[in-house]
Length: 64
Image (cartoon, rainbow, N blue to C red; front, side):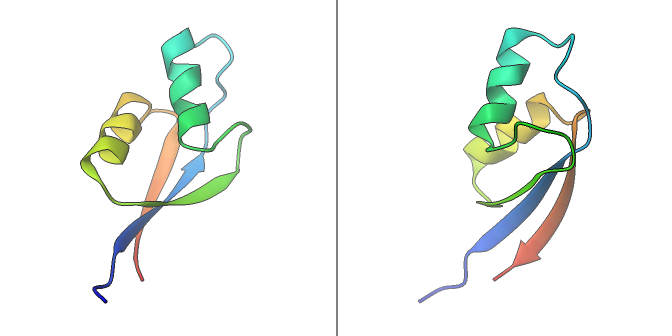
């Protein structure tokens, strides 16, 4: 079984005052409060979501 690359995403910014689509993107990433983290599979769709809210999150790449 091949190792899948993962990304640890931590929310650093508040969604208050952001657009609805940015708030929904954070929810889609599994983030809803500051300083919460989630480990996600590194796929193009996840990278696109991260790119949309890159000013609100911190990214740590991991390999499992």
